[in-house]
Image (cartoon, rainbow, N blue to C red; front, top):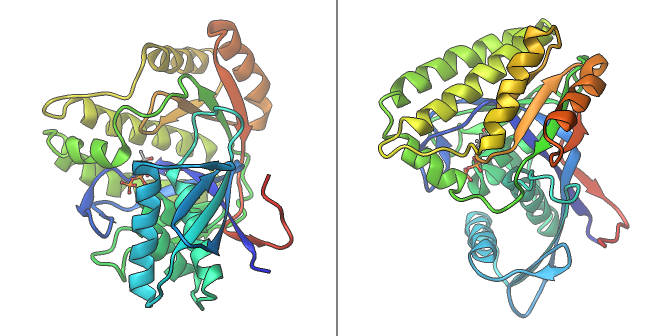
Length: 324
Ligand code: DP6
């Protein structure tokens, strides 16, 4: 029996937000992420009369399914394979965490493809394969901290492990503000961002901040990691606001959480934020502050849900496992 591929979601602390080659998903900047234990996707493939995509036991049709099929066709061409496949995926993202992510989805799909055809691919090649589905998925092949080096072509653009099991107290609190579908996909958002007058400076800043972040991680310096992650995320969102025409993923509560983070720091609670292509905020803090940060959030915003996460592993293959 074929194994099931499991990939965990990752959160970029130094963001990918711009492509040099859209078809191959070669980015304009390198990025760095933390793989999370709390959120993951399980996927396996089966031969089938017709192409089908089941997510959480439900048959999916339309553009979401088409993206999956197009991706499988691309991999089949790349490895000289053919035949219709049925995809079975289960997203283990706590109910409506607002974290359903293409990073775990395409990393699990790449690994499921390698498993189905018994391809002898190493992690570097698996990362290239995942990248072709969604850029951020290239980093979910690895646990702990991973760096996606931008490269210049298909061969040179892949992620590698910076530290698969960091000896660092770094907790992530996912603050769910709105779990609805994104108004603007990451693919579209990063394309629009390129019209900002700050786009060129953003690329320069990213490369400086990446090397500073790698140093901070090597020094186990939580404060520096938090400061850099927050600065980098704010720059990404500043580029969106200053695009022509401008746009933002923020909602009023997103700003409210940012203000609360500022306030908590002024009061000696060390917490930082990072935000991706949506309104939800992810907070970075240490274990000793998880309780107080949660209490402050819940008392300020009674409708928000908060989910704890820390470091998760890279790709796993599971035996004898039944998807619900
Ligand atoms: C803001 O990987 O979803 O989360 O390659 O177009 O599928 P595509 O984009 P995607 O973009 C992720 C953007 C981000 C930052 C990051 O994860 O680095």
